[in-house]
Length: 465
Image (cartoon, rainbow, N blue to C red):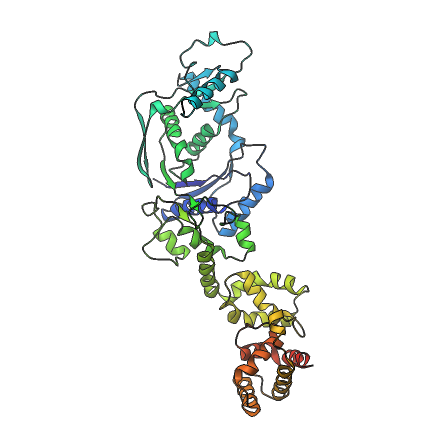
């Protein structure tokens, strides 16, 4: 059997973090088993589905590296096929027309509220002669569901789950205007697409029993189901925007790497021993459904950021460069010169060691891109006292004739500090502020070497003036 999974988002908003994890689990399971991972856009809610949301979802999946196989399936375009299946069930006596009026349905809901139970349709048109239908009422089509026995689902995460059929009513398949409902569309699409494994969030679990009844009525093979735990905030509450319930595009804008986000999402609800850093290659080799937990996973921004810092350090400089250059250009407000690009390329390794996100990395590299004295942060500017300016002037004079290599620069600055009778730290920090505008930077001799003689002396003299 060829494994076929699917991700089926509704295009009513961005690709949120829970949806991204569902897509990842489906993608990994298909890739692990050499199968196919399909994409279906469930755009049947015409009022809320938008082209912008579809574009955002596709862009988010592409950025995450979750490539799908074959063409995208758009659910709304298959409405005629969904209605055809309902008509088939009608013809086979497995579905029926229901003429219950809105008033009658409201009475059923009111009675359910009084009895403190879920509303269930009472089946009043299940075996009734359609010739008794009231005039002017357009019927819905309902599934003639089994009323006795039980429906059993062997869930790959939750185990064996059973529901008594008496607790389920005859669900609607076609609305009174002839349009199919979501539950019918999902089953027909999953069957026609050859889906073998439905891996989705635990919030869909209650739908499964009705869908299994529909599969059985149609005589179709029931796929394997796996309902993965929901994602909560670090406090255990339902995930909200303050916890991280944001679109994937927001994580990109915050400077997270797709590989880091994939790794983090993988560990939300799934484990492989004590492994925390898991490459995509390893994830494909190791991913299974047996090690998906049942308890809600907790989203933690601090852990994601720490993981992202690791991936930043491990990513080759050449791969990071095109990701930071546009941001640095925006930060300094001018196009990057060839000299600036060269300095950034040489300096990126030193800055990425202390950066956690691409945003921090870009900000940390901006001083290499500027020409002339960089603007100093408030805390840093306070260090440029008259005494410190005198030190900077002395260092500039000592450096001017020195060979421009890191060892020679270090030797020259140390010799100046010794002759002036001050500690190296009392020299290095004013130099750092003069050269970078900050109190934090890579090693000061690395900075001098990368900036070059001319640019370094321009900055030092400007700070000393």
